[in-house]
Image 1: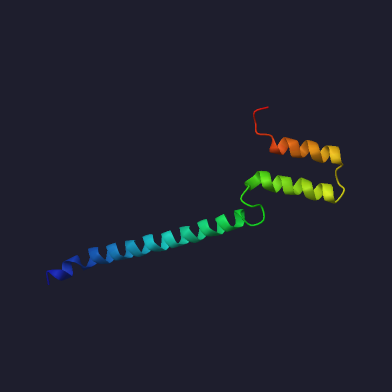
Image 2: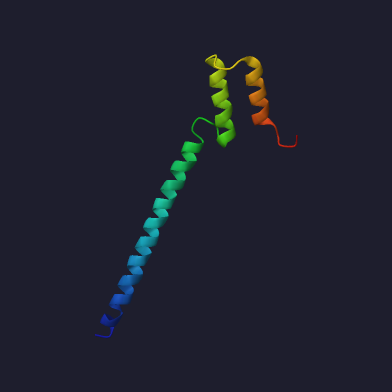
Length: 82
């Protein structure tokens, strides 16, 4: 009968451990999906790479001229020291 007194505490610990494990699994899946989607077509460059791809597409479609393309590309790739 002495063992029965700890049943509620043990059950609570087991449930909390299961919830913690489930949370870790969910966080791992979210991290993996975000990592894979960020590296999809941009090669891991983030926003700058996506912006460069966008102006390349606009130039290819003829929406912007060469000088505008060059200026936008220079603005995006500038290292921030200027």
